[in-house]
Length: 116
Image (cartoon, rainbow, N blue to C red; front, side, top):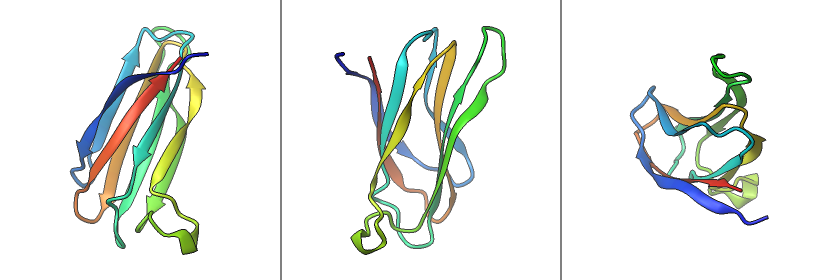
């Protein structure tokens, strides 16, 4: 299977705003995953990553993945890595990736979405 970058960019976080990094509609049957760089986070920062999917056309987007990250993510002693791999999820109708920084100073986050 050949993997390809579907979209990429840098998101500057506004505190307590859920930023949509990618909203992929009409994606039935696609396997989508993402890579996000949390290397700019420092002590006192908190960031959340979510993926939403729809089960049926006309249905409601529901959260399928959630992960919260606190503090600096570039810390080998604490077994933290600045690179986050969002698990592959098969899109049914719609797939949406979001990032929300809830605490700290707004940071820049590099990201990319990969598909088959």
